[in-house]
Amino acid sequence: MRHSTRLVLILGALTAFGPVSMDTYLPGLPELGRELGASASQAQLTLTACLIGLATGQLLAGPVSDARGRRLPLLVGLALFVAASVACAAAPDIWTLTAARLVQGVAGAAGIVIARAVVRDLYSGSEMARFFAVLMLVNGLGPILAPIAGAQLLAVTSWRGIFLVLAGFGVVLLATAAVGLRETLPPERRRGGGLVATWRVFRALAGDRDFTGYVLACGFAMAAMFAYIAGSPFVLQEIHGVSPTGFSVAFATNAGGIMAMGALSSRLVTRTGPARLLKAGLAVQAAGAAALLASVLAGAGLAAVLVSLFAVVSSIGLVLPNATALALADHPHTAGSASGLLGLAQFLFGALAAPLVGIGGTGTAVPMAVVIAVAAAAAGVAAYSTAA
Image (tube, rainbow, N blue to C red; front, side, top):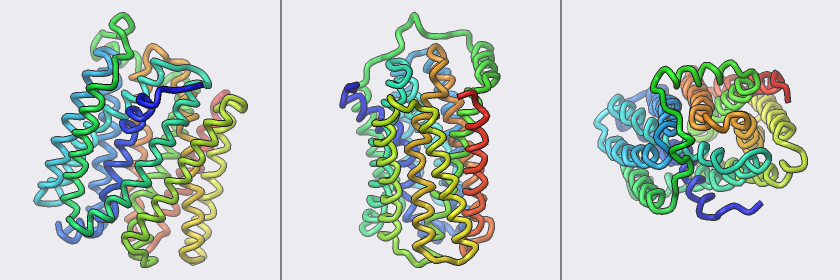
């Protein structure tokens, strides 16, 4: 099936909000902590705050977009993202930065949740799964380019300049969405009723066993991903002596794995179906997580850690598009709310996992490996609890 290039690019950029907001400043995370007098765990709280904002913001933006349409909530969210990014750049201390990152996450959530709802408005079945897989190819550019750009920006500016660049990204995307994205939810398909109706929708979704299973599978898989995002700057740079540029190359390589798996999913989904591809992706993640834990405990060195992390991260290219399509398949009339719960699980689980990797300080990779292994195992159990 052919998809509009403009639509793919716009929705791909919107769903890349999370990776771009987090990954661009990752090479500067140690510098940020030193400048603001913060510990590793406090610096990682800026990541956690963004994740919490991305989670809770989707829970708000999803139902609002079901009631008000997709365009207006999206444009408001993009404008707020720009303002929050400027506030991050001006933050005088770690706690102000953490608060600004929370707002930045809430604002960016509108782009993520509404992009998924737009796809559900326009597609269904295997076509929807294939479109989500195509989006993974665009999304993969975010994790590839963001840390590389961040490392290069650190050569000419500080971590504050990185947040100003993010503000500029928000301005460009706001203008592009205003001009190039039409409304996909006509007034006759919108759902009103306020908070009571929203609560009823959420309760009905939570009572759907298959929906809940796919949401939990997504959430735990992304918890493993965000444990990697939070822990890898310290594990690779401070334990294994990788430079900021080397870290960005390793990070980009793993993101390339996501793109490769996304491309594979797009080619295979119409023949094999999303359920089989989801379980294959979770199997790859579990194998990588087990190898990572064994490598860290055995002190196997940098190469073993990098190979294991590649398997853990690249599996997301199979897991995310297929779990998303399966979760939204039976909920065309509440796509925004369903998308919001899906996003809540992904980023809330990630927010809970991220600070755990710093429990042992910056001198050990064991906490990161344990969190990733537990999350990958839980994701597999959740997926196999569904009927598919």
